[in-house]
Amino acid sequence: MPKISTIHNWAVRETPVANRLIADDDVRRFSIVYAGNFGRAQGLATVVDAAEILSRRRQDIEIRLLGDGLEFDVLRERAQSVQGISIEPRVSPAEIDTVIANADAVLMHLRDEPLFRITVPSKTQAYLAYGRPVVAAVAGEAAELLAQSGAAIVVRPCDAEALADAIAQMADLPRERRQAMGAAGRRYYFENLSFASGMAATLSVIDSAKAAA
Image 1 (spheres, rainbow, N blue to C red):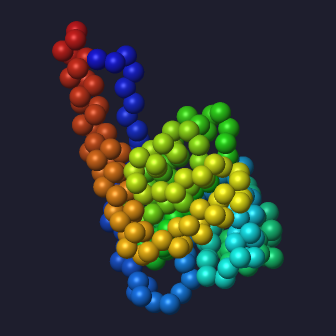
Image 2: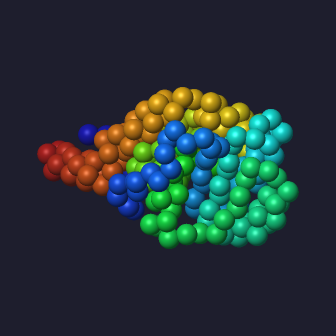
């Protein structure tokens, strides 16, 4: 038995995604959503910079950031002059379910610092459980998990050009491909990161320790 076993946390809510209210064949802009904390660790100024880059190239992408935190007011003021991005207050869990259900993809960004390379944000599990494709600008273990899931386009953090390219790449994928990515992520979550898989792994460690005693 290895001396150290890793068992990841699971999503706080493993509920099904709310029903999609927007028909898939509706003519509309590609929508990508971030939901969560607006802190220094998230480095969301890079997302605003990426939105500005995208606004100069195309008009068919909408970036929505919902949440609150220390950087909320600064980011909202900065984003007011940028087309294609909105900064919105936190909403209830039920409302965010609907927002994400109607999004084409979800977004994650975390600054590249040594501590964060060994940190898996809870958003990782939550996004995969939602069954939506992910654009992630993260490094370290979170990047590895997302790449393994088959649900994500992963780029280096704090690089607005790379993030803008990744969002555009996701927007240009066929809808069926994005749906397949979301389904792969949700499957990966329940097989590797869910409460049930975590409990099974925990019991396996306990049983191995008892057998070796």
